[in-house]
Length: 128
Image (tube, rainbow, N blue to C red; front, top):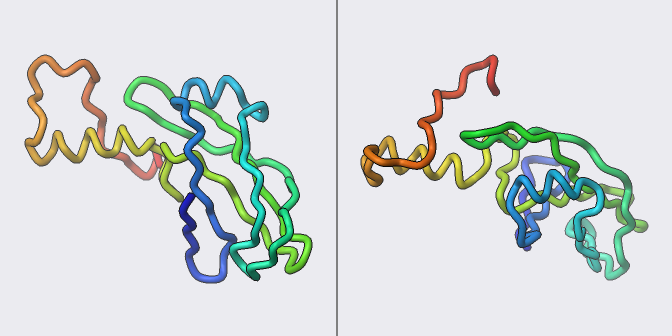
């Protein structure tokens, strides 16, 4: 698992749930969320407790999903950590495989003819 932190905001921890976005969305709050044994803020060696969930979007070239993201709180410093599935990036709605596919397409690294997925429109302020 890796951590991401921007400024003094909550830490985002990445976790590979070993499922695709559709399966993750279907499982909802029943996903196999990890046990966090150490706080990334204060380094306390006490397990963090599940603090709740929030919803966010996960967009592929075929469908949009509303998914649950688990939040944890440290019993020592009381700061929170969000666990983000590894197919997402912080602050982006499009999934990582979708972003990567579009980048490769735009750079000419994948053939356009015979592609199984439809091309994505560029994100606009309305879509993002």
